[in-house]
Image 1 (cartoon, rainbow, N blue to C red):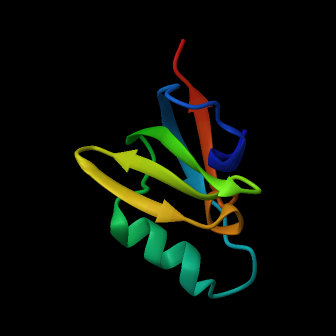
Image 2 (cartoon, one colour):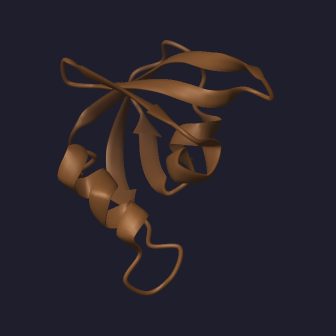
Length: 79
């Protein structure tokens, strides 16, 4: 499942960040920000119009991402 599909306040673990195209600068930036395999993430809130942007917490840091950016992050829901 992708981060954009994750239910609110449901903890998950990042499994991968997928490049949408070769040399994807957005995917590279997401990795630099801490979206790396094994890191725990939580979807904190969704925007009022179309659910965009989404507020995501990685560790103790929160980021606002577009849905297209969150869709690059593959996650596994914690059991």
